[in-house]
Image (cartoon, rainbow, N blue to C red):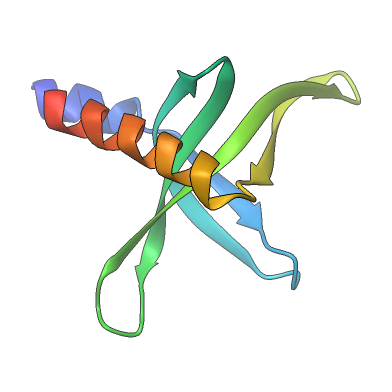
Length: 95
């Protein structure tokens, strides 16, 4: 029963990359590091080697045309990415 409840609570979003390609992702979690909000997304496809693809983004909530949405921003520096990745790995290990 717990797994069914968890599946019902999954949030799936469609992300469009810079090339205009859209793909669905499951939101794994969101978390803060040094006051910055991040989100971990699981892509619904495997990479060329058959591995799952998880991406980390900065995110912020926004209102557009009266509806709440989120804005994803790529993490631009290796230092920031490594901090976010370490926090994400800590979250995963604690589950």
